[in-house]
Figure (spheres, rainbow, N blue to C red):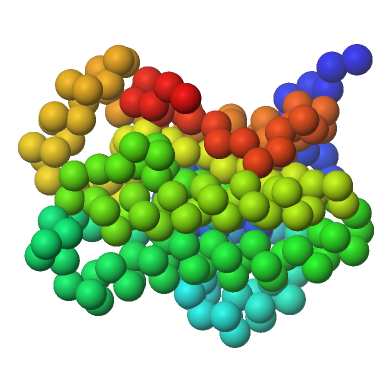
Length: 245
């Protein structure tokens, strides 16, 4: 018998990063509606209020680029069955003019922190013989983007790491996949140049950017049983048609 949507994630303990706003908040809300116990995490202290508003288990404030803070945060939880890494930063700069600090900061926040979080939850997941890791990448990690080489490189790294980790741990019950959204109306995208956004909309077969609630159901699918059971190292693309693999 099909499982009702409200019970898809019953009993699952989820940790969702970047959950103070945007895709992370939407994922947390959809996970809660599907019956999961959800911990929201963000470097923005506003995540505590968001967690309270949504009726989540708790809101954690930490810097995901800090190995110690990631270890302490994950260690403070009573296990993690589902990890969703949906935090990140997005800036613009032509490569020829890009400061090394801008490049490094983007790699630290958008790639290295994802590695730290994945690594921190793995011992518990492998020990219990089950788990789901869902890394939020970007379609720009597949196709690149003008003045976004640093962001595209970081997201391409997330995709490659996701596939590699999936090969390592799927036989032990931990399924690792990525979501690569197209442009989504979030605070992350708000700071991008309006001319870039206007040109981007013209490229999209749908002719519009998505909204977080159109991405979150993909995370529910990947986290669910049996819906997500056959996804291993996949990159799912709610992207308005920007990339068609």
